[in-house]
Length: 148
Image 1 (tube, helix red, strand yellow):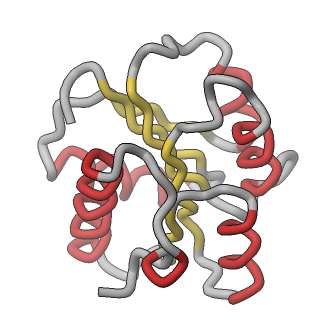
Image 2: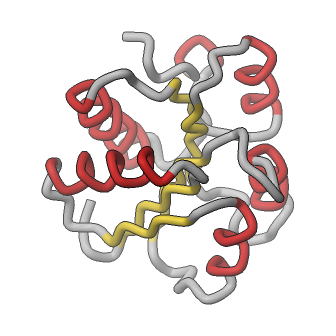
């Protein structure tokens, strides 16, 4: 990614945000990182963001106030934001949650990994997919990004 790109993590867990930021730093990415505390915080900041900057969003599902699925639906129903690459980033491994994310237009699904090394590898893998895939949704058999 280059400086004209942005990565956004929307997650209500401060420990998860900190670990994600450390993985981002470890990859030495030339991109802007924006951390949002929940869906409401993200939607407030979204209006002020430069829309010409390529953006990749990692979105937690289970958050207070506005759930990740509700944020995803708002993005998919907003002209100009409907093509943004969104990867769901959740502790849930529920088939129903994965299916719901897929049906509502997420590009991929990441079950939060148990180690820093796995997180860094998954972050790198997701960025590679997002940039090489022209932000098109992944086929259903490749939607769960933790699978190799």
